[in-house]
Each structure stands twice: as structure tokens, then as C-alpha cells.
Image (cartoon, rainbow, N blue to C red):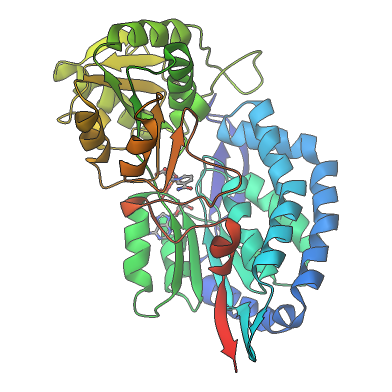
Length: 442
Ligand code: NAD
């Protein structure tokens, strides 16, 4: 059988391998999931949730090894990887508790509204948060009584394999199964006899999935890419805004769906803001996951790194001003880069760059800032820093999640995209219910 080799992005060495799932195997795997769902679906949601106490303990007991594997395979440092592992352990128990509340039947005047399983859910996930992006979809699907066929990213198969091994140890047979491979396995899974596709990944793949699943009217939850804007107003706390701008642009080497990709700053404070950003960004260190005090790691692969360099070069050619970095990137990394005077003709502004680049331009009015921020078919997150007009601007930003003087995501809200950044979402009552069929009994 064909091997899928996992590479350490910091040095190009093999971390390990798994076997690619042959395409012709996928229909049998889905059939097994269908059969297993009958029994699993008959358990009460509370009975299903109980399995996750032991699973959390096992994840927690193995946290060190899992963290190291995640770091080596994906490139993020140990501290950040360990946060993800915690999320897959006791964090999953918390998600399960929230799902239980969300799917409790509701009785009103002789009618009961029930949230019953859909059947088999295909979970397809990306590499940038290889555990959390999977857990956020797998747990609501399972607690709701579905069985899951999970296809992790081809960049991070090992951590997915280890997590699924733990799930399999405690869950009944075939309640969770894994399919390894790339887009070909993903397509075959989407076209198989699954009832729902819960996907986190790029906008382009999301569109392909929507097309391929149309004939079966399969249910979809799609958490897609972003090109998040940040607006900095004249009355913003400049130092705080600059800290956020750098941290959010560089987090996970910029490989974060809600990383800040475009900054529009009031021209009256632009110079001061730029100086502050450069001072903060200059102190950022990159390196391998096990190096001391690094802020971000390598880029996941060569093609992603070449795309980032192409965006930087394109901006330079079109007249943007490089204030920091932008050249002499060592193999596998992108140096901390700050670019000003970016405009709408540049790839940095038009597309999701997904790299450690602060990209900014100045604006002369609040209206111009809002217009530019909304001039995108993405609409995942957005942030505004400032006081007087911040609330009004937040209301006018076309994004699923907007942060005022903070990041866009909130632990107590759903993780949701607007426009072409999402279709369906997860988290909170309405998010969890998307993994169920609503059934009314009169
Ligand atoms: P990707 O879309 O290339 O791949 C995601 C997954 O889909 C992988 O498992 C891949 O093998 C599979 N796949 C590829 N082609 C497929 C097809 N035609 N049909 C079915 N499956 C297919 O994304 P990526 O490069 O792994 O991840 C980065 C992207 O994910 C970025 O755009 C990022 O913004 C986005 N993302 C979004 C969120 C969110 O919550 N909105 C979170 C994390 C990442």
C-alpha cells in the first residue's frame, strides 16, 4: 500500500508515516460506519458523553508525547501545541457537556422537538490546528449520535492517527474511523454515502465539496478561509493596537484562519502606528518547535512558503513600502515582515496570504475604512481598535465575528464565518444542533 510520509517542516526530515487509504476502501468504511450508527444512535446522549471522561484522561496521561508529535509534525512550539492537546482532552468533555444541553428535547403544548442523529458524518480537517479543528467537529457529531469517518490533512496524519487510536480504544467498533490521504480521498468521501460533511479548510475546497454533495443534499458545515481586516481609529490605544496587529498577523506563522491580513489605519496616526508595529515585530523570533523562546515556527510546506513570498514580491513590485523583513527568508521560514502602503491591486490585499506578514495602509475616513474592509468575498473575522466610532463600525463590518479592541473569536459565541468564509458553523446551541436532524413529534 502507498505510504503517506509526514515531514517535520523545520528540517524536512521524516517524522513517520501512515498508509494511504485506497479509494475503493472508502465505501466499505462508510458502510461499516452506517451499521455501527444503529447501536450508537440508540444510546442516550448522556451515555455517549460518558465515554469522553476516560478518553480525556487517556489524552491527558499521554499529553507530553501527543504534544511533541503535534509540534514536530506541524511546526508550532511546544506551549501552543500543548494547548491544543488539552483541548482534545478535557476540552472535549466541555464541548460534550454543551452539546448535551443543546440537543435536549423540547416539549411545548403536546409537541416534542427532538434532535436526532443524521447518520454518518464525514469530518475533513486542515493542518494548521490539526487536533482542535478536528475535535470541534468530531465531538458534536458523535454526542449527537452520528458515527464519524475522519479525514485529516495529508500534512498532519500522525497526530490524527494517535488521537483516533485513543478514541477507538474506548468507543464501540466503527463509531470513529480514519481515512488517510489527500484531496482524492477527500473527494471520494464527500461522494460516498455519508449524510453530512463537516469541513474546515480553504474556500476553494469548500466550493468543490458543496458541488459534489449537492446530488445527495448532504448536510454541510463549512468553516472556510478568511482575509480578516483590522481597522485602527484615530482614538485607538496605539500601542495596544500595534501589539494586537503583530501578534495576530504572526500567530502560528500567520497560518491561522482569523489572523489579521489587512490593516486600515487612520492617516493621522499612521506614522506612529507603523513605528510601533515595526518596533514590536523586530523583537519576534522564529525557529523550530523545540528552540527557546520562539514566537513562531516554519511554514508548513514549500508551496505555501512560495505563495507567501509571491505575495510579498508582488506588493514590492507594485510600490508597497517594506518596513521590516520581506527578504532573505531562510529555508523553510518567512522572516517577520511588515509592509505599508498596500493597496487593492496587490495579492496581499486580495487573497488569504497565511504567512507572518503585517500588511497595512492608511485611510482618510471611517467610511473608507469600512468600504475597504468589506471589499472581499471572505467574511470570517474582523477587528476594530478605537473608542467613539468602534461600535458603529463593528455593526457595519461584514464578518461572522467582530472584535472591538480584541480578537474576533469569543469562547462563548459560535465560530462562524459570513459571506464565502462559511456555510454553517460550530459551537453554541445553534451550532451543535447542526449535527442533528430536527424531528417534531405531535
Ligand atoms: P485545504 O482546503 O487545502 O484542505 C483541507 C482538507 O480538505 C484536507 O484534509 C485536504 O486533504 C482535504 N481536501 C482537499 N481537497 C479536497 C476535495 N476536493 N474534497 C474534499 N476534501 C479535500 O486547507 P488546508 O490548506 O489544509 O488549511 C488551510 C485553510 O483552512 C485556510 O484557508 C484556513 O483559513 C482554513 N481554516 C479555516 C478555519 C475556520 O475555522 N474557518 C480554521 C482553520 C483553517
